Length: 140
Image (cartoon, rainbow, N blue to C red; front, side, top):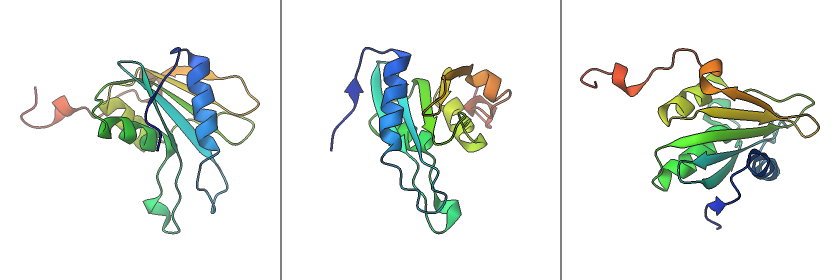
């Protein structure tokens, strides 16, 4: 199994990695394939694809798959997330993905669809008031 990639670090490379990951999605129920790529603080790229389950609540979004892969390899700071989904228009990350992005310091989110121009948003635009670790008791 291939490990993380190091690219030129450009947004186009990250979107291309997300598009390639989309092809690996397991979406037999919705048939809505999503791929994601994340860039860590040190420039490594990790990818993920959505993984559905017949028990829908057990499904995993591409964004969280990619972030969790990076975190499981020791990364704790993710700078940028790119998401490419089926359809004419880009699909914004769900609320759960946005909260996970906040946990690991994502600053920028790029969303695209196969035939559309990418849109770039800050995480703050997508999640105005995240629940962060410092809000937990005893964390300051």
